[in-house]
Length: 542
Ligand code: UDX
Ligand code: ADP
Image (cartoon, rainbow, N blue to C red; front, side, top):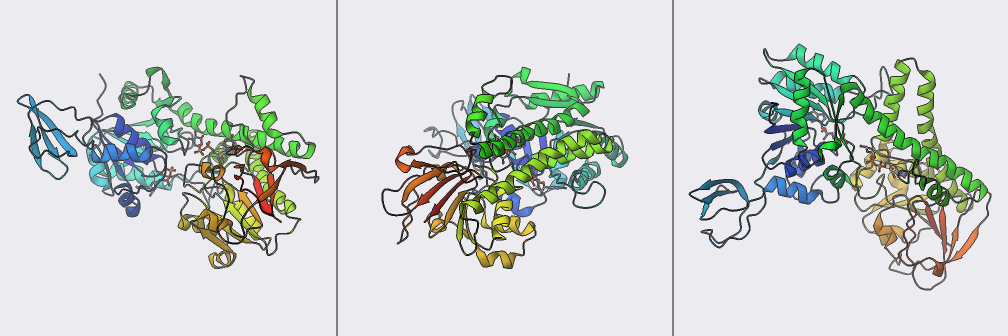
């Protein structure tokens, strides 16, 4: 007896709102989904053929839902041409279809049309809100940079402004869904805010429905989620709103949709991210021990992961975690613990972040050490700048720490990333306190990997993009890269074990979590080798 959702609005067309609501539209041809954002440039990009974010598989989902499926070429169509269908209805045993251009055609038999466009991107907040039965809030909630809770608490200013806008516009009942990660109890303040500001007679039901997608695999995570959490009030209206939202996840097996209390639901998101990040910090702390003892962290990780109680996931040591979620969510948890006067709990989670900072800096020191403790005047090439492969996202990327630290050693830096935009990289580096002009005097961003590697003293793979493992580094010009030997396992105490290049199988992909920096000393001439794709590879030329 719950209400059927026919129109959805999504506020925020970012990494969360865009893919999530595109998949919802794709999977529910009968629901109209409108994604709004105040950023005109972003909306223009979503309406173009070059989407503002890169995610494998996303183009197909968006183009299908946004532009509609092209009706298969049907010879009975008067025009005889395939057309992108905007509207279709049955008429006299046939199908009347309207193309995107408004042109009508009558097909004398029933057509399996699949999809008419049902995904829209706009900056027009008011009409999207006014029409919707259900509104997802997918705005960003960064860490506060001033005031109470500075550096820990989530800044809810975008969240609040979206809520105020909804209260102002809505003249019919709405289900409001928190999708952005928010502090525990936000739904309550949200409800109070909506009720205090709404038009007479309008009722809101606030649900929590956190998103667990991981960037780079967002589409497959959305299509096949481990679980969908829906938190609601236990009142009958709350339960009924939860049921309406549950129907929106029409493609998810019912036993993976978990209903729970609102606060549990909000906290589960923070808890899940904290637990995942904690595993990475744990394994990274062990990688330091491995490097000091000659143990191999990949072997240790593999050995531990085989225990089913531990499991193999999120157990790869690397240069430290990045991304917009882990650090932010742990800090938000720390803030919550502190506000509850649970200082031991706060300290425990703080140490997960501290370990991550340590790991990032430790990696920089290893690079310097491998290059005879001085980088002055050398050229270092950084391959990869996004915080992980298959995304152009650079938020909290360990590459920033890396570049900042080696820049201080007075070297020249060349950066190449397959997807992160040049503008984004500069923005990120400058945000980190560096003056742009000064940075530009010794940093170059390349669009060609070979150009980036030309004449470098060392190549550092900072992101595990597949293309780095499949690419033979054979730059054009006089300074051809020709590895003669690979040194692996350079440990802090300077022990080096040599492995000849020919023992590295072609195309071998070292996980980004290679145990200890893999170093290839290149020189002489010979057959080009593939670059080991270890995130902590340093390849230097003698
Ligand atoms: C994470 C959570 O996985 C996701 O469920 C949540 O919704 C948002 O935060 P995301 O940040 O996109 O997703 O990526 P994730 O794959 O979790 O990686 C985060 C960081 O940890 C990356 O920098 C990655 O390189 C690093 N990482 C991951 C490791 O260092 N080792 C691992 O074993 C896994
Ligand atoms: P996330 O990774 O959480 O999706 P993003 O920064 O990628 O974060 O996306 C959040 C989006 O929300 C941005 O595109 C931003 O312009 C948009 N946004 C923030 N506040 C509002 C608001 N009040 N109204 C509309 N859009 C908003």
